[in-house]
Image (cartoon, rainbow, N blue to C red; front, side, top):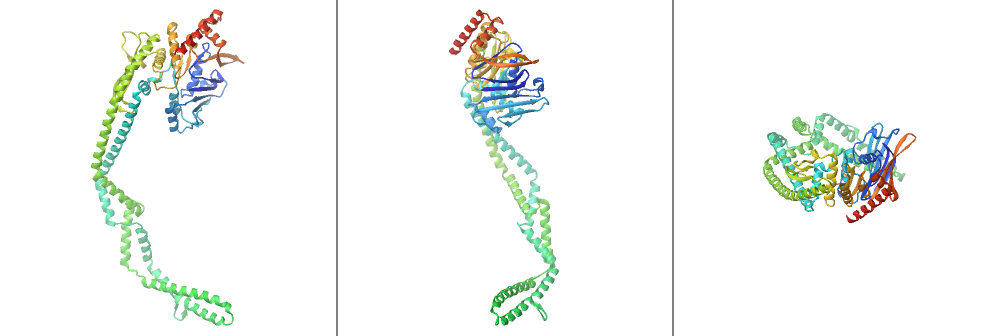
Length: 564
């Protein structure tokens, strides 16, 4: 429910904070005091239209902030989680701001969001019914909420239907994906077979290309390698009479051994040179073996180069590396396997989808039967309520019709039909009901199904009393009070009979200061409330008789509320 509404620079509202309560919140005041402006401000935080001409004269911006308690509103809480909007406890704070440059912003619990998301949140929170607005229940999803909340069995039936429907949709998607994959694969079966055979002829292996490339590089530089190896061998082993490194080290070791007879500190150097000589002799032997192993057969090089060329052609067609070629080969095998085995999988999925569709239709039939039962009940109850609200000739019908197949809400279409006069056939509610009738019909719906429907937890009636008086006004007042027992109601009224039912009475007045007009809002009770009820019932003259009549009206209203 709405706890607090704070408004800055919104038309006549300069800086106003209003605390709302549970039950029936009545808003009264002279014509033009700003009651509808206050409702417009509430609409702004629910996602309704906001324009720069609403900014108070002389100001550069307007802001509206609302605080809601959403305890128990599980659908809204789930929606907020889906939108990743922070929720600490059960408090929801919505702030909307607009500058005179047209720049707007929306914050929900401090998280910036879009107007579309705000509108969705607003539908969870409030129904606003004014003379120039369509009922929220005229939307298809809200029509179904009206019927689906009428009897408790529908909730389980709808849950079962949605489970079956989602399984059916999943089976259909899986079947469609397989059919598309098989169709695409079948079209290129010959190409896939040719590509697989081309790769199989070459039979590439992982790491092969790099090894071949290294070998070809070696063989292509064979002469240079042989020449350099010969020179290195000469340096290490000697050429002709010139000693090599190993011989030179042997001579050096012999002379050091001779000198060590005179200075044994040279023994360490002898050991180190001996180790170096052993290593060099080993290196020399290995280089000599390498030299003997060199075989630069031109035919072998040509064969290696030919193999590389084949691998290069595969890389150009199937991937930048041989590993990529091998991956593509596995993909081709899988695609061909899919084609070969696809008929069996296709048959299995078709049977699964058909079984899921059959179950959906069964669940839809069950849901339709319950909805027809619920539609009869609410049609009867709402028509009776309308008669009590002064619409003696009214007829309201909720009609369940076959829809265009199964959808998320079932296999039904729902039309709300209405006739306000004898001899006139019922027609779609949106086409025949006036603004005043729509508000009264909404009140009848809320009154008939106050404990059972699934619509928003709070609602606004903006001048629902237009064109009524006397006993009808009293009946309207009692039904508004009945609705307010199970949800929060904000009601703008000019009728004392309705205002006397208030659980919280808010009075709006205009004040002028320094050439500017400002609307103030205050909670009235006690003698102030008596005076306001007297003004509404009798006019501006607050005689003792008028005040006594107002006190009597409040007493009767209190008694009537106790009876509800």
